[in-house]
Image 1: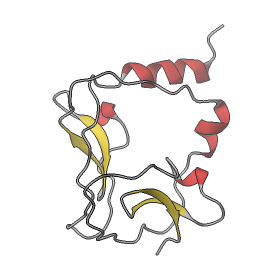
Image 2: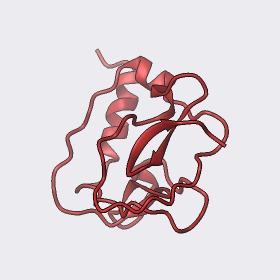
Image 3: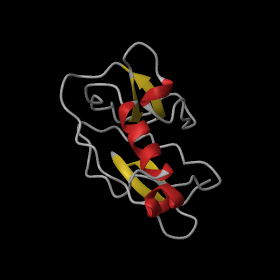
Image 4: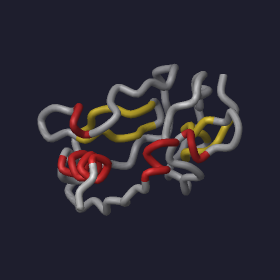
Length: 126
């Protein structure tokens, strides 16, 4: 039985562009972290919405396959953005570290999931 929720999940999965996001350079020289997209469906010309040190942006993907993580209803309900902004991280990295979080809802209290010290980490927002 397909519910409206499962239909929304399937619809979102069909909107994913092929390929994988390239490894981001790990420094943000532009200042404030800003998301220019939320998903591949917002990107033109086969580009993917990829996370980089300055936020999400439409990016030319690399060839490869994507392993789609199936989300539960609670993942969709609580995966909301918390108020305030991520602090600017000027760390110069040669490689990216393991991510501590994927979105704000995975961080305790008022902490936000931000690019910090070469990975996504739960940090105190500004």
